[in-house]
Image (cartoon, rainbow, N blue to C red; front, top):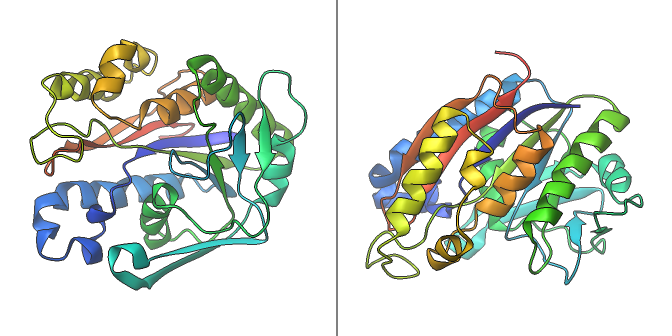
Length: 266
């Protein structure tokens, strides 16, 4: 069953080694990521699912990681010495890929075992919080719609009940990428409004309300958090039991939100 659910950002700059001299500018988020990771590990899961918008995208189906292990480094960001390795949760991945009329999920070919930064950044903090157990990375279709995300969340809840044990779910996503003229997508005047709306709802534990965003606003600010948030919220049936708000800031023109969405115990 799902025993905890959290939302992490995935900007590599929140990792102190990657940030270097800029670490102080994002220390609030870095500290929040570790607290959120400790919060997840404290729920004593047997496995962790990471929902990543940067995992390999198949044309028309969700995907799950394959092979006996998944691993990754931060070589792309100048730090090959940071190496992550976890057992792949093949049992859960196989169960998720059983036929389900409303959710198409495929196992990636075995050689594709490298962690993308959308999963590697949360896992960096989870490892430092003491996690060394099985991990399953779930990727999205090329263009998922809200109905598909909702169905996947419900299917995750059903499958995790069926396989037994305790499962934690970690959604990975960054908020708007348009908070300043220096942002990756350039400045958009509605970016702050988007972030403020979602942050307010998450802080209040209103998971359903956090998803009630006009599509035009959502796509104009360059976010990659809503799909993951929708899957996670549906997986816990929009319950924010024992939710925790850890942090929000946007120091480099991108919004970083970190929160515990659900836990079955305080």
